[in-house]
Image 1 (cartoon, each protein chain N blue to C red):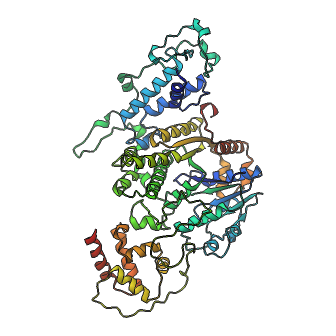
Image 2 (image 1 turned 90 degrees about the horizontal axis):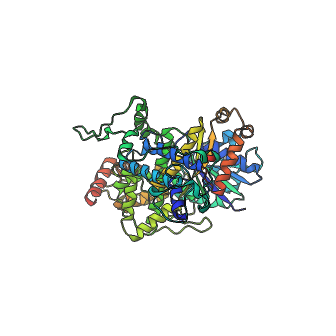
Image 3 (image 1 turned 180 degrees about the vertical axis):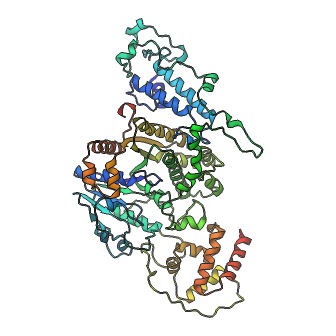
Length: 316
Length: 305
């Protein structure tokens, strides 16, 4: 077996070059068990990710690797000087002198063995005998898969519903503004290079219309009463992003101030004012935001939300 | 000595991230390294309970309000050589740290005089957590042998991968990833397999394929199994490592296990102090072993369990 092939076979069993016969045996039985059982805690969460056919293939790879490393009858004296197919190993104890012992150190007990620890071959039939859930092909009228679950395993299958709750972040009450804004995992700060930034360098400039420098921390004015001069507002004007900006400026407020007060990222305010709809992807949240913002500015919330969302929908 | 940042995450509460962070930190301090332990959550604190730290001492707020330097927020822990940066302990209005502030925090953190900085990311998979995780030199994930913990580990890994790839694609100008696909991949009801999703991204073009492959190659996770009650469960570390490599195409190393120990429960409850816990015969050698593996980038195998 060429060294590269051997390394490949060992890596299928998660073993390094110095693996002993015991390691190989342990690894083999471990991975056979792992991929045979759909209900192991390591595999069960990935039931759809690793379907039955794939597990079959993996099991056959594992078997092939094991046989190649250990031999058909379990004696690990393999001729490494020539390439061969694992099935064709012919081992003869008398050929010791001609055979290289490369890295696999047989333990004393192993050399007395004449049978491999695990004896079966992975034919289709064999895989049937390994407990793999076969009822997975049952489908009901609604096109839902019905899986027959043995009683002992039922608790695993009850868990997925709970998991959905448990996956909820613990810090959910501290709104992560960017997530809330778009309703999806996609968050796009204008500075889009978090992994590339060296901490010693300055941050690149933002290309967003903003008041004030990047380096500043927030001006925390939440504790103070913010007094807003409420100028009379024309009731017939259509509320657009531009209009919101105009009102904001007339109140002598900066975008960052609004962000602090409403506890959202100032960039969202910028997008709203510039009507950058492609950056505002959660209509439900956006509507709420327009209502809050306009209410704060002293405008009619319902009218503002209505006008703005109409424009949003027509453009999207 | 090269300064290193270790980030400890795992997605689910109760797996032992905080305990392990504190134990790793105590261990490193014992080896005469200058250690800073950080409550990665920033908006909330919990590490201080392990060290009998007075709640008056938190001053991260002042740092973000630009009233103090980061080095003035370092708190003594009672362990020589180990300082703590604690989250916000006082305010009823939780500290909400924005993306730019977090970058600033890390910039200043890296400039502090320390050999090793250990960040307890806390539970959750928010963007701040994912970004902090990806910024570390050593990315460490903790899981227990329970299926819920393992499932959360997979979800965390998926989110880390997606975050990393998206950032890299975005940086190179590729922004047209279908959001529906993204959302479905990350929820429990997947309409597309994660591996197919990765193939889809690669299929967007030759450049994209290279970016995705490079991105995946840059992620190396160090796995720690915690709260092991029976020896056979320690092998889950090897299974998980195999699965992460084979099905998520990232590098994974199994760093070792920590057995379940009643004393640790006492530590969490505040009725034992970190030094006494660390000296326990079963705990200290394990922490030494795991830390060593993480430092060296070593992998644990069957014969070492």
